[in-house]
Length: 196
Image: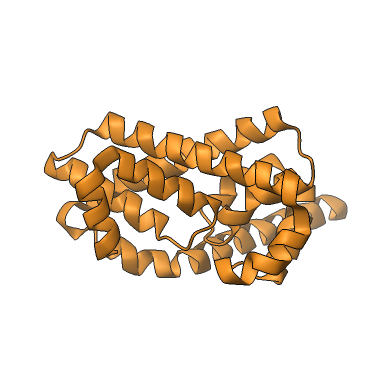
């Protein structure tokens, strides 16, 4: 993280843009920690909130659009060959395909908040030939929510922004727990309706 922090300190908004484009495409970069660090810099008065959020959103939008195009052009053989080098496992790919076919747009929005899934959600959309305008609508909404959330979190945390590094290591577990709770709630409602 110290290298990324110095990169942001040196290159500013252009650095944020570059790191997010590469991170969304699939390079193993700590995107949430980076965005929280940007929020911390806004808290210190070193960066503008509006410009930081705008640049972060643009970087993630460009990154996710490139992933979508890569999915259309390269397909599954590419991910099977190079996925392990980008920390993308085949079981994640299979799960993402199955989920994408069921949930489409919601998967694109929520995928931003699930490490590992964020990197392949757009790629799966491209493989599935998901209509670009529908893809863009959902993916870009996700980008706005995701980037804004973590930058604002960095401002709220202030001098304690480093806690996000610890939190993000457990974030996927919390998100999976949340998804499980929703899943069981939906099952319970369906079961209850059948009884009535």
